[in-house]
Image (cartoon, rainbow, N blue to C red; front, side, top):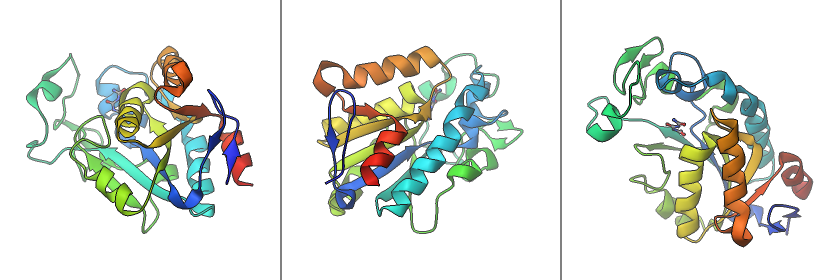
Length: 220
Ligand code: TIU
């Protein structure tokens, strides 16, 4: 069984019962003109994780680890978007408004699609989620259980929002979760560092964290 040096200790997993959950590698968060920038963020902060996330995807594909992509997306009629989510803050463009990449955070719009380097391959599962967590109103838990998945490897954006929320949801459902350091990023570097630390604290209260090289070495 592959085993790697992780924080807070060794993480072992069977590729056949492991899935990669790549969270929200979408233009809406990573490129200018999308949801992330409309919220006032410096989206260039996320660029550093795109290539490592692509390498993590390639590694999992090469070793038969199931690949699941999530995207934060709302229906065009906004029926799945609580007014509290749409109206919060002082965004320059709100969810559903038209921006340079189409309607902000709306399923099917150009800006809501994945960045090319992390685009799903044919046959990979794509989960559209209306919330920050990947388990909220998606059926993801049932799909994972049907495939006998017990271990989840995470990457994606942003670390302390959709990645951490999803990882905590997964942890509460009994999955053994590992977050890959370079494959995730935040608009706030200090929040990424804090998230990695709080996941592994208290003996792995939420799960494990590890560098991409350690995960790759375990599969070699
Ligand atoms: N704003 C922010 O940091 N993130 C989100 O709104 N969604 C995700 O993290 N995908």
